[in-house]
Amino acid sequence: EAGVAQSPRYKIIEKRQSVAFWCNPISGHATLYWYQQILGQGPKLLIQFQNNGVVDDSQLPKDRFSAERLKGVDSTLKIQPAKLEDSAVYLCASSLDWGGTEYGYTFGSGTRLTVV
Amino acid sequence: DQQVKQNSPSLSVQEGRISILNCDYTNSMFDYFLWYKKYPAEGPTFLISISSIKDKNEDGRFTVFLNKSAKHLSLHIVPSQPGDSAVYFCAASGNNDMRFGAGTRLTVKP
Image (cartoon, rainbow over all chains, first blue to last red; front, top):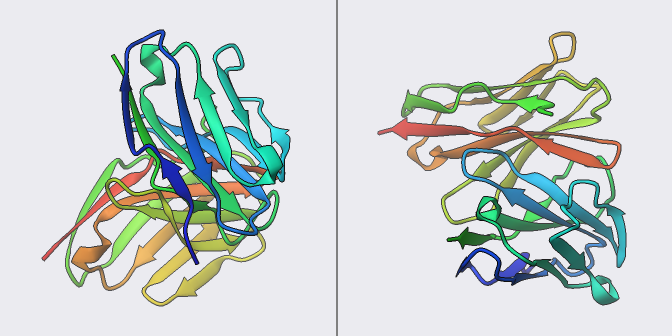
């Protein structure tokens, strides 16, 4: 089966600019996650969708970050305006089941964002 | 809040020997504990998991042990191979949430 697709792979922007990331999950996976991984740390959940509804966005900095999942398939994550501390790898993941899972999530390769 | 901790940032072992990666957690409500493996420029890949009601799960060369009283789990790789060199993340899931540790970089020397 095709994996989780993410684009772009790399992005360099200046602070205060805006940026958008795209994710296409595995076909049939109802749950989609966006994670932020800062260098030297583990992935941190930003937002979780179940179909096209938001399940958890408690750790999303809503003053600058937004995400949507139209039609319950692919998703976009936007940062506007970007700050230096947003430099990180943004990972998209999807899963068949919701909540606690023994089968793990399937991650994409991520988008490495550098804010200068 | 760091609910999942991997206190060793790196580990180096000789090919053929055992690799033991450790992880500690603080929240007793987690249902499953998972290990992911990550190569450079790729996303984490699910490796193995264990339910909170078990104390051991084995899959080929990989075995995960869970000690609930100590809130500790470990991943054993036997025998270790150079292709196992990667960053290993411990994760804990439950209540619609998954938390990750900071990762341990494993290097297996030929």
